[in-house]
Figure 1 (cartoon, rainbow over the protein chains, first blue to last red):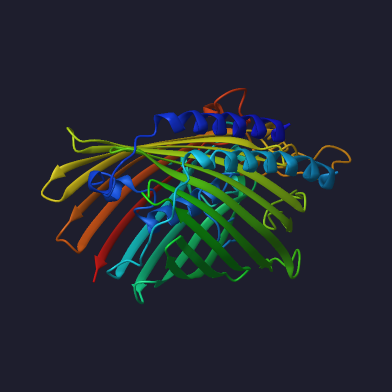
Figure 2: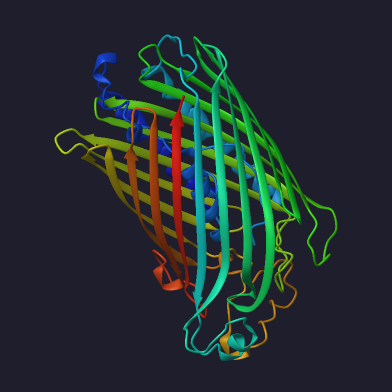
Length: 76
Length: 398
């Protein structure tokens, strides 16, 4: 059951990405001032991300999403 | 049974990965040089995390078993964690950099032995070390990571590899990663001895610059593990020895030039072979306010279905836990396996002191309730759960 949901979601996502190709604007290096701001990057505070993932994965059933590795714990 | 399920889901994941790979030509270009950071970075962050749980209506017998100090308070204190995290990123030359993170957790307090009742005291200390070595090449980066985490009753060791590949204009970055973990479990109550839990993580992602003010990221994750997933400190807790989960994550950052503000939006879909499906929504507004200050209010909503072996609470039986269904192979009365929704509000303040140094402060409040579930009926008979966390950090580049 969950496999099918995941398959559908993955398909929708990939279709959206491919559609998105036409929306992509070519951005030149000298136009990247805003993109270079720390808040525009996806992992601008790795220690905060670490705490957040650790807290929520020990209080909820879900984990993972954006990375690999990192230590497991007992966390009861 | 689990093996059959597993074979069924692999082709679907394969198809998803293949479709993702097919999207590649429209964004693929010729790779261009990436190089190590020019400066080293030293960061430190302190965390104070404190849980409390409302005493359930009609759970007076459970209350009697608890460690609560007075009847005046409608809340019991649960786990408290005081943690420190220190991270050093050091460029070796233009092609190599290394990083090391040390985390210490002091954990104390009490957690329920079943559902939200029968509190049992606990105390532990955890020390985790993460090290990594990154190579920067004309094609992208390659990172090897090694991690170790140790508690009195739990030791985890892991190795990971992460590769990125960017197009010439650096507007598209592909990411592929694998992580392997080997965990050893020796609970203090000796209910089991030298148990193990081994898992493998796979990740495939793409980050795309959409415009001067937009960047998006998609990640597909897959985990497959085998071993001891039960909670040794809970009554009636027998979980399957196989766990597979798949995640799909989307993130989108948008900068509003005229407001000097950024929205950070994220969504994650999670599904596993235990019957748990969850959705996580994150939204953050980062407002630059001048003089090096920024303020970022954030909201997070989480909702999950229950594990198929979760045994619902029955407060009428209190102080006794409900028996698992007759002949059930797997069962758990852990609140985290129930159906619920979670809501968090946070506020983060950052002050850039000078070009190389900044300090940050974050406060977050979290709540969890059966009735906060997105659709359907959440699990009944559980006391709402709350937690607050405070973080104070310092980052210095040198």
